[in-house]
Image (cartoon, rainbow, N blue to C red; front, side, top):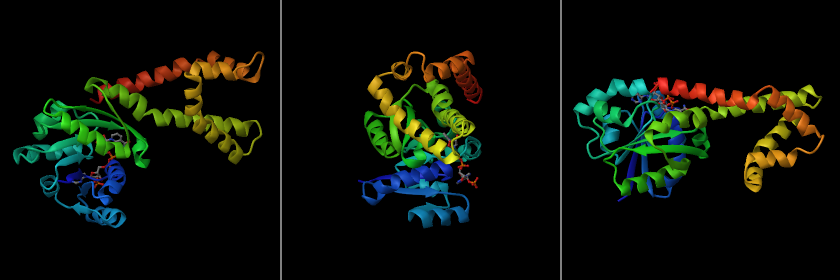
Length: 266
Ligand SMILES: NC(=O)c1ccc[n+]([C@@H]2O[C@H](COP(=O)([O-])OP(=O)(O)OC[C@H]3O[C@@H](n4cnc5c(N)ncnc54)[C@H](OP(=O)(O)O)[C@@H]3O)[C@@H](O)[C@H]2O)c1
């Protein structure tokens, strides 16, 4: 009774799922396959992962219990009508990673009743992601358990109401870019005050790697900041500059902007 999982349209995100699920496939816990429209890509994936890659999406769906749709939203919209006509997803559980495609749209356009919608962060590419997940009313408690256990191969899973997905996207989805910008600025600052780029990067890598553990010890970023900030010290001068520039307010504004854009795209 091994669960059969099909990844429909294995592009970048689909490949992350193939890679993350392959160990479970090798342990014989699940069976994983995928589909792609281009021969060259099918050959590439077949070579890299030694899994079955279908040229026909319909055959992939027919031979799967759970279908993970990793197409772009417009690519799905182009296929959905014919898939609905063929009732391809009847009795299938579908996990959609497509941004902006709602559970209602999956049902109305694709005839998909039993659907999970997930929003992964970039961390899924090295099995270190965070995935927000919601589901249609046709999903049974056992489906939640099965799907959560499968997705945990790619990182942590949280249940989130569908109307919070745009907020998750603005913070968790776009977040790596904000943090990367801060990281880049700190590396440049080290170079500006005379450190070599490689030493500066090493220091900044260490700052980011150690931060989550430190925040756990101090229980909140505020207490960590207070612990580092000594009277008349260096940190107080640095923080004064950041506060005068309104860095905190600007970061909040940036996330609000991203959120508004995510809402527009829904
Ligand atoms: N990238 C992210 O960080 C991220 C984060 C969260 C959610 N998402 C969502 O994940 C989805 C996939 O994103 P992605 O970046 O992985 O896109 P992608 O690399 O373009 O993946 C889509 C793949 O599906 C293939 N495809 C298109 N039509 C097909 C068809 N009819 N049959 C079979 N395969 C087909 C495409 O082939 P071609 O190469 O020939 O076009 C492409 O390889 C999107 O819906 C996006 O909203 C992405």
